[in-house]
Image 1: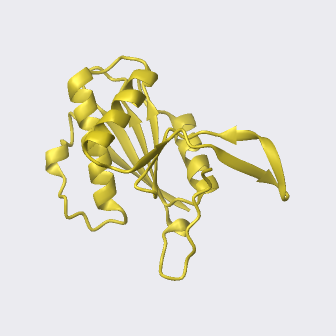
Image 2: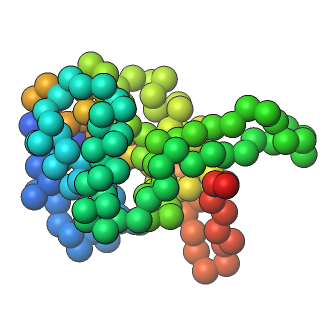
Length: 161
């Protein structure tokens, strides 16, 4: 089961409107991630290639001392056999949050499925779709897979090499 929060865009919910004392699961990490995304979009605007935003976003996360792994390789298995195909999500942020970056006119269901697949493969509860494509606003969505919310008895698994 998953929950999607359409969190907004720069035209609807400014980063300053969020509280840093966010009590949601991994809320502070999400706040930091989206704050960095707003800064990249503020600096570059929309409409550039995804690769430009990927590199700029990685720099901004580094400027803010936010831990991340870019383009980490995920191994996949079928009935215990390692597949040759690998997945490469854009970022793993703070060791727990999958971030998938886009530069498209608008996010769609295919983008959501891609992120949800990455979240399931890595067993991560929180994921963000971040779209830098729109010219005047940053579009983003937060997803939660409740079955992967960690408690004291759960064992962390990243799936990253």
